[in-house]
Image (cartoon, rainbow, N blue to C red):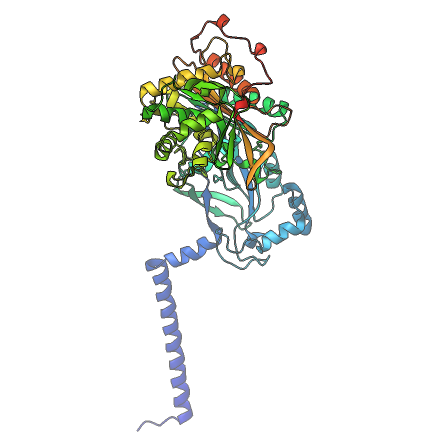
Length: 594
């Protein structure tokens, strides 16, 4: 019989065996876990390691270039560097932060605030974490769009957690000349106005991304892989001609200054294609330096603002009457004694002309004659003509914020409204609408679509008038720039010119201002085979002259002469047969438009 061990000895041995078993079990579990993580589920460890040393950096896409119709650059993107920080890797001394702040043009307090991330809550950049600076983000922009020399000096500080990111900054070589057409981009290179906004998707491209490895100081030491290559944006070729744009800008600027006008606008169209060759608004701004730009200067007034066109609308009234068959060019209307009463309202001519033919109503710009012709028509007939000419609807240019103007339904017209609308009061149009409408006469009855981008082939026009009516009105418009007309200063030596003046009182409250005017002229040349349509408007000229024939028509003449010369358009009139502009009488011109 074996001796029995005391109970306390048996308990001690059992505890030893249990402890060894537990240790073996723990070691087995650790070995199994290690084998699992490293052999079967190693993605977890790799993810943890990469979160400390790997970064995915966005690669900006190169924004597409905007050019004129001849390939001249109007908007280009130049590479710049932006300074960003990873706050978790930042461990800078106050002295280092001061040097950094001085280089990037900020004070040290602002740099600390950005590192803390108080202004970036909700930002799309970076992952959440806790950093020495208290920020919950690992990506913070400190300064965008630095010049290369400043960026190099930032790198020279050798500060952990400070990085450079290649981006692109938009530059506009023509500056203020094309500002209202092109618009501009924001700091993220996204279009905010004009063509930049309208064609944002095409111009922007698609950003890419790449994976990099950082060292313990946060510096990028290796490009691991390109996840997605950036895709550059498309280039856009506009219909603008830079030389014509400059010519229009120069002449309009001079006219605004000489006439002390509040503002001005000019549109040059290719009469055969409807392409916009030049579009200028004044005042303008420099898109390369918008520090002091206000909202009013950014508006493309030729498309986003409307005005009453005055007597430039009379040709459409005449066209409607001719098309209806109720009158002919030689039909006579009595305009004496220079006034025409409708109810309590009275329509006036500046000069009593007596009996005028329909053609002379255009040449002399008689409000009384135009009103009587309009009232001889059913309201719907006149409305259909104005609507068919594009008034009351956008031109289809695709420009952001383009207005449709104002053309009320004909069933709401009172007789006095129908009469005044015949000479451009009670209707509101944009300058581009007005220029386009005159393609009805330059295009022998077809209304041309307008385009701000270069076209490969002329588009089909919309037939609105018969060819016979359009040609008849065109012959009348030629008389406006001839002796006896209201716009002899619209003449262009060696070319036949057709066009119409307009002088309208500006709206003020519920009525019209007594001494504030809009002066306009719209015309085309050569009249025998029209190539270009030009519309000019000056807002509130205040140098003593305000008639369209003496304020706007000379601008038309100079710009049209330059355009015809630039395009080598053959003469359609003997040079000696055209009167010199210096011989044109001044004081009485265009008074019939008021």
